[in-house]
Length: 288
Image (cartoon, rainbow, N blue to C red; front, side, top):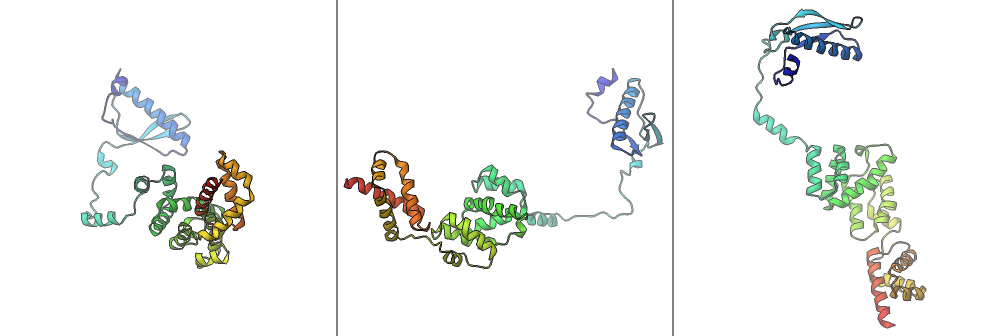
């Protein structure tokens, strides 16, 4: 059959246009009818004529309106009334060089150069504003992972709660970077930075993060002598727990740590406090 032979053809056949269709349903019906008509015509050895047809939805058939036997009827030729436009390749190259990186390029950079997870990178490139803010914050801090965590955590939560977008976020990358620096330097805890200083900084975008930390009494105690007093007090409070710790219950370090943080009002450097607790526990074991 001619129909099966046409399946192997790589060249398109003669076109027809269907015009004056007033609904998607009629578009579908007209196309289905025209397919059947052309197949039957070719099977009978006929030839499809290049023409414009209309569709009769009452009779469910197409009928010719006018013939278009030449390609020029479709205006496939240069417009004689328009001058040719010659585009300088140097100008094209300059435009291309000024274009921002596309999401795919940013995603690849974030996952390969910044070593972010595909999930985090995918969220960061959801909007150009978010990607630009992330890159600016990462440049300011030198910590791509920390910058990503803050944008995907506190910043994104604030945007969602306030039904707004990155363009309307009140803190500049430089201002947020100065808050992150306080936490990275151990002057305030990450918890205090996120839960206490960050909300207050949003309310006062022109404020200095360090000044706010002092105002809120959130500066961590980082001196070993000051923290050691709290470590001794915590251990002295639970002598029986020290024996249990030495007998294998290592999870009790959390109990002592909690006591230190409670007595310092959460201002003790967690990392330093944990090391000092471990050192004191080892020392007391040697003294037993």
